[in-house]
Length: 431
Ligand SMILES: *Cc1c(COP(=O)(O)O)cnc(C)c1O
Image (cartoon, rainbow, N blue to C red):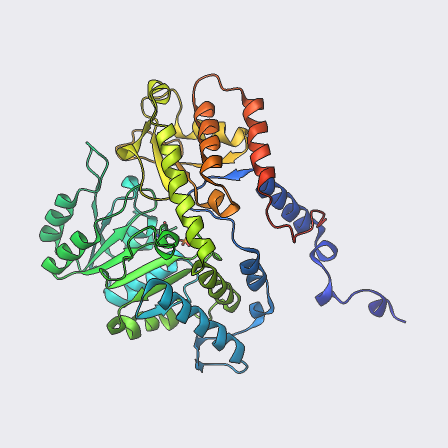
């Protein structure tokens, strides 16, 4: 027998055999996710079933085009999963049309701008520093380079979106597109007011629900669909699916949106990710997911309440807007002894990952910041109940107050992580 017959063919080798270095990092990351707690508002622990679909042979399939209209052979199964994904997303969000091919949330937004606008047209969207997203007009992003982006803001007095400014800027600049949506804002937006203003100036309204799509699916946040011409989303934040994006729209915009995604912005879709999206949409329609979204919002309220008490206020830490309606809260650290960066490091030291965040009217640079964004979506997915959120709120408060007992807090976090193990099907010794 030749050596080739004795050894496993390269195509069939496990990761551990083929690439021990990457396998070691994968094991390390699994260990990190198991032993730490993610409170990064844009993260989730996705379902094992989603990962199975994502890491599957669908990855091999070239499927340019749409279900039933491909440019290559052998697409029966890809067609079937794409149809499943589309039908499930339509029913989940009550949408007339859905495109599940965008590779990411940013690609979904790019496709919508491409579909509805000409280069140089005006977009009115929330300022990045006030909670908006890069793709809503950040200076270095394609949105600001190809379009004329005008920003609205939150009010200094209560950190809520200034709808009077939105109306004033809309009348002044006559945007072709108004964007409502956020990456760091702890409240629900007034969709009907955005619709009224868009109608008044003859603009399209795009609602970017990248962050709160899971809350919508779970019935704990109003559905933007009835108000918007187009809704965009990621599938990996509160929705708990694979990393990716999607566009939902009224039937009248369907053809333009589809053409803008393919061939406008992308070539072949990620068939494996579309399969994983289909799985995530099925799970998101279930009772367990609804319960998870309820625990998510309840958990954020519990933490916001704990961080609004006099001991925390005395340390100069404020909860922006005084609370939350969603899965995240924002801390204003301008008057505390901690910068956003230091607060992030402090929590990381005890095993909780969060992210520092610019807050409105921040005086510190974006790599330091005076804010902290704390989310509950990942922990609710892991199983956290109101009882656990009360305990973690205490841990977070203790960590941010002066003179924390780091060792003791780290042990408490480790015990809570052990209480909710993840991915039992994955072997702990990949390497
Ligand atoms: C996260 C996010 C996006 C972009 O998603 P990516 O998948 O990272 O490209 C777009 N819009 C908003 C509001 C987001 O929060």
